[in-house]
Image 1 (cartoon, helix red, strand yellow):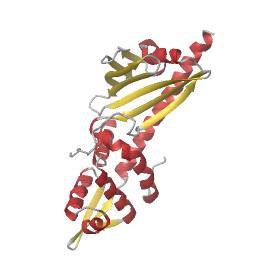
Image 2 (image 1 turned 180 degrees about the vertical axis):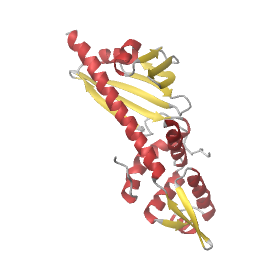
Image 3 (image 1 turned 180 degrees about the horizontal axis):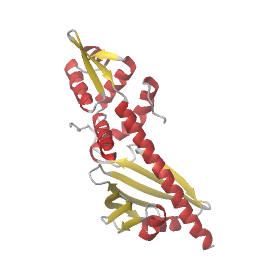
Image 4 (image 1 turned 60 degrees about the vertical axis):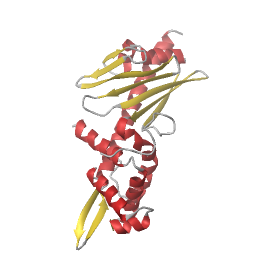
Length: 143
Length: 114
């Protein structure tokens, strides 16, 4: 596949994330941070089996029955940002980043998941292309 | 059956990585069926460049071609895009579910310690 583009693939803000979701939590960033970076706490909400070395370059393994993902911790910024890559065996990797923002009375937690490698280069355009295509082509998009 | 879908998503993203190729896809999306020459007229690139991009898009199953006399007609095949879009929706839904579980887990603990 020819995947060279003028722009290098970067996990920066200039690329729209593939998926971005957020939630508001009535707890401090410190309390959220613990739930994101402690493997026992991760097992309460992410998946039944989680192994995590919460240091940059550390490993992460997430298992839910047959569904298994492994990856590497990329960013650890205490109470602010936690990021890792993960992938299922034989599938493409994606980059997952949590950002915690203190709000009065709580925290905003944002997660982005963005494919990396060859796929990443298309992401920036993807967000804008899809709605336009949906207008002009008959999609069976919404199930 | 996640892997084949994933590979397809990956090749769709790969094919759309090139900005000119995205223009070709958008033009095809507007025009129904076109020829490489017809596309080249609408885009600031040569017919040869159009043919190259069409071939890449065909590789990702995004474009189908049929011979009509001496011409090749190209048509957008939106199913792979549809597949990629569904995959995005799946991942969004997964994170919504996980974030809700995270919120529950954190708030339960926070209220206990207050």
